[in-house]
Length: 279
Ligand code: HPA
Image 1: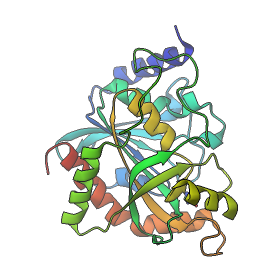
Image 2: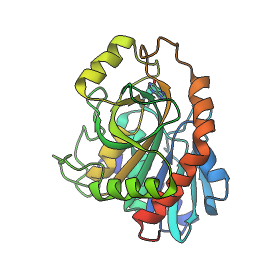
Image 3: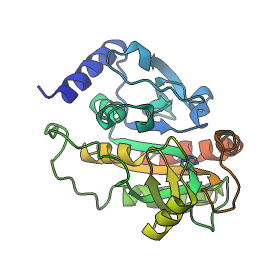
Image 4: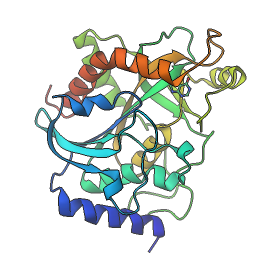
C-alpha cells in the first residue's frame, strides 16, 4: 500500500475506535483563533490530542494547541483542528495535510479554513477579515506530489473553483446580515517561518496576492483533491512587510487575532450554519 495512505488509514482506525461522531464540516483554526473551540461556539462531544495518535504530526507553535475537537455547531456535526501543522515545522507536505485527509475520511464534506495573514492589499487594515477567493501556492511544494492517492482523488486535479463559489456567496451574505465587514481576495502561501521581505511582498502584490501567510493553500489543495467543498477566511493581523515600514512580530499577530476574535467567531458560526442550510 502507498505509505501515505497506510499512515492515514492507521490514524483513521485509531480515531474511529474512540470517536463515533461523523462530522459534516471540518474547521481549521489558525494562529490566535484556537479559542473558538474553548467557548460555547461548539457543544463539545469529545477531543483527541494529536500526540495520542500514532504517526500524527504535532503542532509545535506557541499559541497553537494540538487537538481535534468533535462536537456540534448548532445541529451541525463538526470536527475542528485546534492548532494546525505547518510546513515550516519540518514535516513533509504529505504530513502537513494528513489531518485534512483524515477529516475527509471521517466523513467531512466541507472544509472551513481560517488563518492569520499579513495584508498585502493597501486597502486592507489590521483587524479586517478576508474571504479567500483564490490562492497562489507555487511558493511551497504541492501536497499532491508523489504517487497519487487514487481512492481520494485524481492525479491531475482541476483547481478552477477551489474556494467554492456558492459558499463564498453564502459567506458574503452571512457577513452582510451580521454587519461584519468582509474583504475578498487572493491568499499567497509562503513557506515561513521567517516573515517575508518587502521585496517578496512587492512580488506577491504584482502576482495578484492580497494577503500572505504560511498555511492554508496546501490544505485547500488536499481537500479539493479529495472532493471537499472548501471555504476560507483570513484575519489580517498586520500589514505585510514593507507596507507600512513597521517591523512584524508574532506578538502583533496574536494581539490582533485576539482583538478580532469575537467578530471572527461570530462569522465562523454563522457561516457554518449557513453553508449547512440552517441559517
Ligand atoms: N506573513 C506571513 N504570515 C503571516 C503574516 C505575514 O505578514 N501575518 C500573519 N501570518
